[in-house]
Image 1 (cartoon, rainbow, N blue to C red):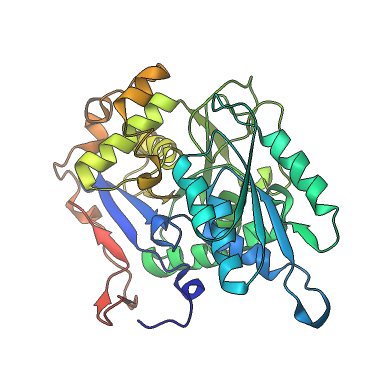
Image 2 (image 1 turned 120 degrees about the horizontal axis):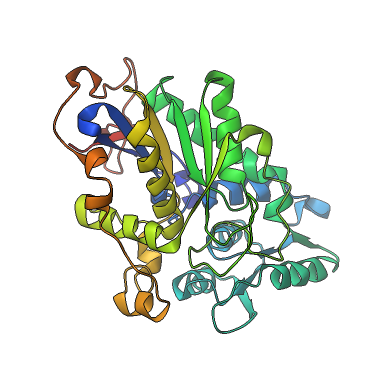
Length: 360
């Protein structure tokens, strides 16, 4: 596969199939870390940039965004390709790898807030708004920008193409709400009975409750910050909260059992997907998103000393979900079959590969 620029590699990510309950239920994980900066946010970043106004003679705008890292990475990559100046407002909650990625791609980073790692979403947003008052500077304002959720129309189309119209549950982390609500809204046009479950960290306030510190990066809304307009509660059937220990335990499990490195928001979503799978009707097909790559969190989620310093305890996912993860076939007729007529996806060397990877 030959492309003319890196933006053409956004999307068309593979799907990992994991049979649960001995094949009675299927879990599909959309591997969004295969996007060029390692997260699904590349999709919405491109959508937001394409919807920005341009100056006279098509002059590219100067862009600023408040971000915990992944959106900033996507915007910095796109800005590099399009010849735009980009400034990211980040806080110490963001991993150093995310900050360094933005800088490596030519973006400017302004880090605000307390060095103890506390989220400073309100401070970031206030500074972004202030900077956007300058002529020619545009704040993409991801939490309130409809182009955010529009960027996931293609993701929904890919899921329907690769899995078919048999998806019963869509379970995903919720931060800005773009990926969850944008994907769910598009899926519901074909699957009106789809159950949509949003997952936030315990301590986030998207689905109410009291807020407190959490360490799952790039997801949820901390106490004191506004819940953005991109979140459409009308398309969400249930909101769930998952604590850091449970989310990070799933991250460790996926790495150890499936060779899959994911971030904490993905761990939380997969944890909830496993809970749903426990009592889901036979034949259920549960879809979730691997929002980003765990390589961004090697010094945190996958570092025992980092976890101990924050009193985050891990549990055994093998034991907690022994009934769900059982590999004994109790319903042979429920093994996933790829939809008839589904096209294979090209690889970089021009050969074909299936878009779904099956793990027994």
